[in-house]
Length: 158
Image (cartoon, rainbow, N blue to C red):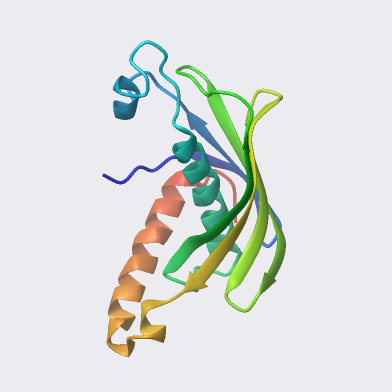
């Protein structure tokens, strides 16, 4: 199953930073198992929310030039607190540097004024057609789909 772990992009400065939100609801399917008597967002999902925000920032910064923007490395990941039902996870990502096909970002997840997760991410950008030229139509289809999803998520002009 694939999860979209952001509800809204609320701040976007292409090439610089992004802010997005995720409202955690008790109806989230995975909370039934994590944990039944103490439901909290799994740490890996917090990291995935940071990764998704970073990918949206990169896509918007490059005019959706790449069909794939994937996590290559997560460094210095620190979990400081839980995110529970009824809480709003605010995700912020800032581009630190970019070269070749990689982008380095500083990311943080907050609940109110409290940091609950932070990391430095290295994201890799690519297209399927770079290694398989016959996959260019797939790249175009993925990019079209990502642009449509971005239109739904982003509440600010890019």
